[in-house]
Length: 63
Length: 152
Image (tube, rainbow over all chains, first blue to last red):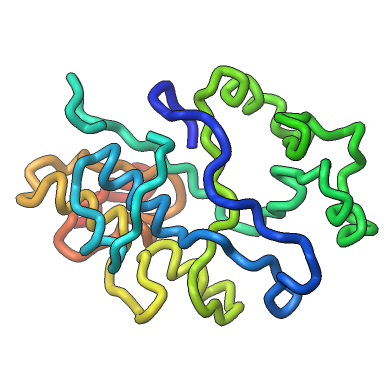
């Protein structure tokens, strides 16, 4: 996410590379993509995210 | 926040296709990266470090200044519950923000509907590219895609 008003940095946990943490040989996700969508909808556009992303996902702090 | 002088603008760059996370934001400080990627790993000396653990692929040189100026956020580890490993279904889920069922419209289309409920402004959202993206399509919501036509 790029922009003058973006708070730069790493958000979300980087997926584990340990064999035991993989899911069917794939990286295991650590945060639902709708967390990012909700952040944009609520913190940038000030619209209610829940009906758009079909659930409540607390925002990240990148804006 | 959205309580600003001018209405917020969002530019979505949709790079449709495969992207290799581990070779984009590279965990070069993690020995497991080199163990798990014996053939397609990026050598440490080619990484653009952003800290002691992670670095960008050398192809991201143009993005590095944004990071250095604190204007770039990276969201790691995104996914959704119970993936079925179909890329077609996965893309549809990204566009509709609806992993549990087939949804009729895209999440950006729903945003446009919220911003402009009466569809007063046909230019609330404009798409450049081939056709109207699924994320932006929603019945009753105008979306302009200059390379083809106005869809209403």
